[in-house]
Length: 195
Image 1 (cartoon, rainbow, N blue to C red):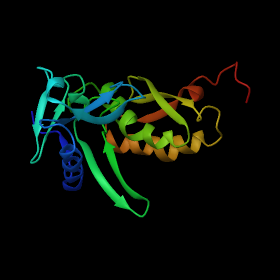
Image 2 (image 1 turned 45 degrees about the vertical axis):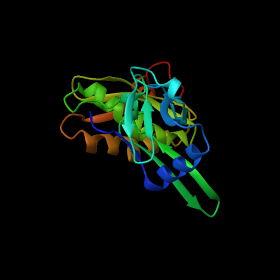
Image 3 (image 1 turned 180 degrees about the vertical axis):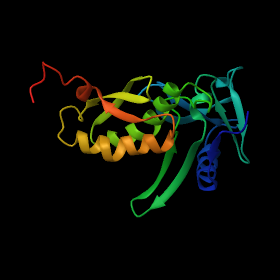
């Protein structure tokens, strides 16, 4: 298992300073709350020696170790912890692109791979508008059927967002596998629609 968590130099220095004020033997713990869900959050806490579990993975850094519990580990793949200083002051940033969904293998079924891209790339962009999309199915002819939720539902920009953004992004990533991306509401425009 490769060391999947990156802690930048500046973040390591920051942790080392904090740990210097803690009882000897204290390290840090990196974890994910609600892993694999839309509400997943990555966090860091102090990890005194007595809090280390046998199933933890220890990732040694020069001044300390980071402990990760078994459940969080797959969701912290490619995570980056940085300590950024800008004019607003200094802050710790945690980026865990796989916290909402563990990384899927390249040979996973198309549905899982598309779902992964939606969760890790598309939804974070839509989140700023309070919306998200959900993958419902992929038809035999390679059409991904998605459903908008949250703030995207009924928004007049949905078609633009879908056609210019999401569909383009997904078709580029899954060349030859996906033929189109359709919104469920488009799919259902039948006798009972009000347009």
